[in-house]
Length: 65
Image (cartoon, rainbow, N blue to C red):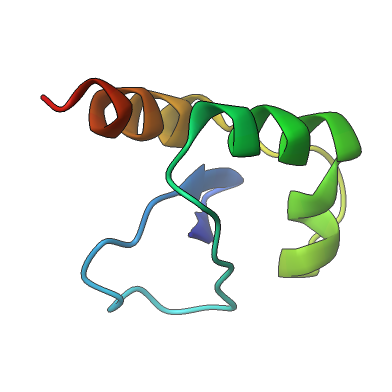
């Protein structure tokens, strides 16, 4: 994952510029990371990040679509 335009996005091809972070592909892991507010700290950005795009990808992967 990387930050693009104040939004957290999944970098599946590992080609986007910027500092990246890894996470398990499970909704439980995403919920825990959101609850602990780890994304801004891990990616070294200030303020909250929109995680809706990541949530959509994780849910899609969890359901096998």
